[in-house]
Length: 300
Image (cartoon, rainbow, N blue to C red; front, side):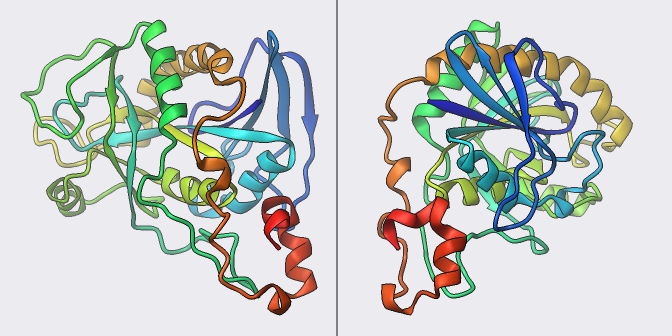
């Protein structure tokens, strides 16, 4: 069982891997953000890909999400853990906390969010976009790393200092970016009941579901977005400062989670596209079958 990790802002590498090698992968959807790093931790295999590229060259809307997810699938990943920086939309979720989000509101509009199209129509179920089994394993790893489960992410609490809190569940608003939110947008997202805001995870979640990959998102809270009247509006500099500590914790959690996600998958993620394809087999162009063979070859 191979775990794929999509690293976000600040998480550009993963130290401590054995048998490290790089794969320069080409996919039918173009090139991924960079070479995929493969390695081992003990007997467990891991693939690592920094979504923004080395040196953080790519804006969220410039990332080739389809190529990134396809590259991980192509190299044998069956589970994908996304690690990314987010802003908090709740007083009870403070900078330095971690959130295992389980729902998304997708407000992006400039990016490809599906492998389907160009001759093949398909629709996967996305009501529950995160794999509960993978999220459970990541939560156990975070607990072992010293993160205590905090208050439910859906509630507001008086602002107070948090010490390494993990929030299970929560809604992530995925905005286009690259600008941070206006105050009006931030208040709107809070009114919708959202808990965190970022720029990448919803797109990855959709593609992983289509690719029949288990998916979980570990959100590293760096700021209070722009709604909090007692806090300064979010800036790139403030995000980076908080990230430095959070990334070290994320690396520790990944190492602890890896042995917990070995073996056969007990979930239904591996069959999520089984009944998704609507196009009659005889109507699917040969070029589409070739393009999609790694993803849906057994159904075409």
